[in-house]
Image 1: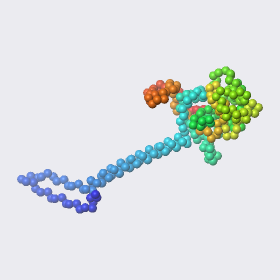
Image 2: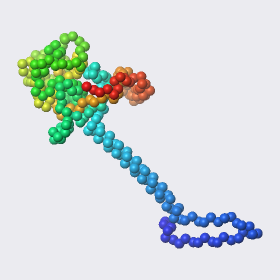
Image 3: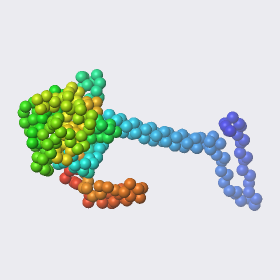
Length: 285
């Protein structure tokens, strides 16, 4: 009820105390308006603070979603196919803007052109729900062949200081690619049929809009030799930096909830022991 619309009675004049003693001092009645206004100010202040906090949180979430969606994305290296450039346990930030967004703006902005030698992250053509990371070896229009593990592009030997070899040349299909006379274990049947149509004079011709990729660990990499080209639209971006790297301390944690919790607790409590400090914050190239 709004007390301001009602008259306020005047306080009685103080009466003399018996025996001439002064009575206790009379305290003027507090204005009813003050009893109502103060809580309203407090509630308004709390409401404003809550709204401000929610707006700040919402802004942070929106920015984070924007960054993850359009600028960078985090990935973890799960296999040895890119050793020694990328190791199992490396955590990457991938630049998703470097190659553009496949739209009209690509011709206006100074985006990079996908080049031979670039490391790229992409949707695996056989199963687009999976993400792979490999190095671009052949770009559209290239004539590619391998002789005893060495790559030749357009008739010239490709300089590859990043490549790691583990075994002597003993896999005919893997080390002398392309081979249309013999299939290989792990070869995608659809790719086997497609590849045979793209080979001329013993060289594989990379079609427009596609890229031929391989792992740096050539003897232990399931790559374009086995499943084919990477379409341009499958490419997400290129690794920018290794923001964290951990040693291979537990590659196969239990799938149970207790196992995952133990795995997480161990990582947190042993973070200084399992971190590869010499790889953390290392640029990828």
